[in-house]
Image (tube, rainbow, N blue to C red; front, side, top):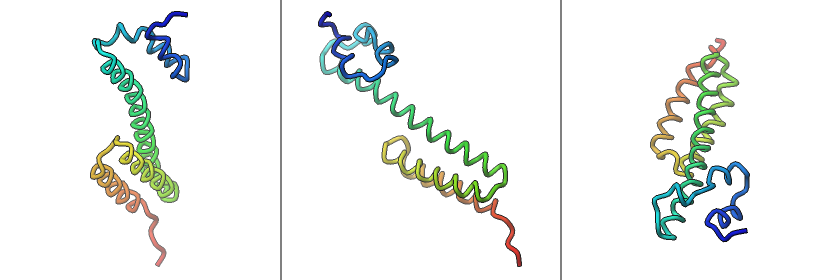
Length: 121
């Protein structure tokens, strides 16, 4: 076909939805230089990745809060482990600051412990 800007992008994209979203990319960006066009393309991809990571994080936090609200200690403990793992991965990926993740884990762990069944004496 042509040697247009969109043709070069289509080689690197993996799904049709990405191609359709980025069709006419040159018209959407204000950039005029090759380097700034590249940064704009990278921003689109990084934004999608960050949005996915944030969504995954919010979903696991919601599941943990639901299991705490249900009062099921075993399910809350299992869900806490998964949530703590996702929080740590979010820190590594730059989605959350390490102190924010630490604060979340501390507060959520306290809530999970509060759900603990009464010990038989």
